[in-house]
Amino acid sequence: MWRNYLTVGLRSLLRSRSYAFINLFGLATGLAACLLLLVYVRYETGYDAFWPESDRVHQVQATWHEPGQPVAASQASPFPVHDAIAGGFPQIEAVSIAYPYRAVVQRGGEPLYVETLSVDPSFLDMFPLAFIRGSARTALPNDNAMVVTESEAIRLFGTVDALGRTITVGSGEA
Image 1 (cartoon, one colour):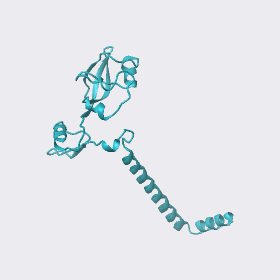
Image 2: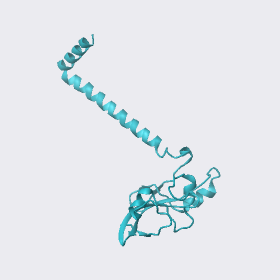
Image 3: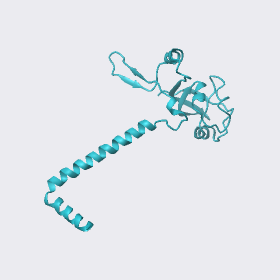
Image 4: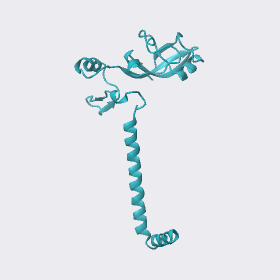
């Protein structure tokens, strides 16, 4: 029975090729559009969902309108926004600053570029990171302290035991 259906279907497709091409092309285009849309929706709804209570965490983004320049969107926002948000909305429980930049670190006199994220201590209260050495409570005692990932500790120091070590960091904007 299935063999009969397949034979009739193939004969029909071969008899009217342009009609079959239009139908198959339309079906393939529709399925591709549907799959792309589903992938996009899944990405947008699952972004940063691995954090505990991620539905309570939000990011402030900015759009820059400089005269004579094209409009630029940024995931960073001006620093005064921190104070305005913290004091202006009673619904907000905590506010943290995270500023990404590229720094240059010296290791044995050789410069290394490191992608960094400059944060304030409340960042570690909002995002519970797993620590190999030390703890989130004591990780950022002052402005000169830093937390490094396991892979960066191995790259910079040759070992994961980076607690208490000193490195020289400079601006690496290049």
